[in-house]
Image (cartoon, rainbow, N blue to C red):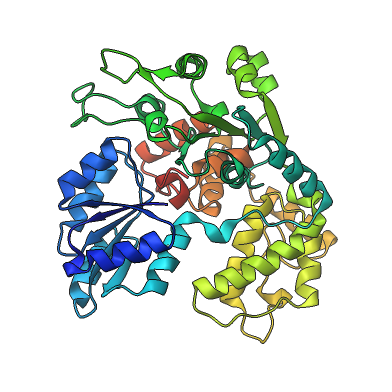
Length: 448
């Protein structure tokens, strides 16, 4: 965990630093926002920024967004300064921590950012085989390709491998290749010099240099443009990168982990993915089985999410009833662990009895109807489409799916069976036509 503190925190910087260091964080301090930005641009990076509420919180958040530096911001100030706390949250701060600092509160914030509550949790033999193989290959420096359906936990597996590797004390840096537009992804990966393009207000090191000595996760690599793949291949082979606008190559030492929910062999045949890059990445492949093939994981994960979201929402912790568990085990879980997590989050909020019963379980494509009733309802839905154009139906399907995925373009594209590029083009068209398009999901805005 890399913590950047900006400002004096009302004279409490020493106490806050010691608490964070005691919890395993590496702390860097900057007196003001501009020096703090220079630290982030320099490749040192940060997993969390704590800023004195008396600083220009909005200015920092806006500048981070303008330079596409993805890092959560937490504001700190005296507990009596309630208006400053409100302004900080409205400006984009993720949380507000009152001063003087409370050890448990800071620990909770660090734990949330470090995603310690999202460890690999499994009880199914099929998943145990994958974890055993991950344990075997983690200590090496070999590139690893993690495949599996959307929502199976590919990024969590990548983090698990990093924690088990010889590089565990070095940075873990993730890049979502599907969430970043093609025109910006090259700069995101390799960095740029000041003035290299419009908007390059300062020199910035890319993710390769930020991950120096550690692990670089290329999430959803199948969505990377084939022209950029050649530069990536050279970076992996030669262990050096070229910043945009730079005059000489820069040596890098990173371990590459890539994820995809597509069959890369098929993408190679279609010409959308380079065969030489595929072989370079595919030193070892880990296939994560879908949740429906891991039945024993459904119950243990359901209990974990019920406990976690009860604490996160400050509501009483309620056990799952047997009827609710039966309902969960019968479901197909096309969205895998992510769908199960969202379902339990809703259930925790909806439950009103001493247990979480089936009445609080809202499943996608399941509303309590019998199979016969579902078929009749489907027929009626189809009849309701008569008289509408295919383009109208397609638009509604795409937008409804996007709302269902809380704006996450990657998940929506997977459900719809189209590429992320096709989805983006459709959304651009709908926006120009005056239709309301959901903003990107939280994970995509954060680069997760």
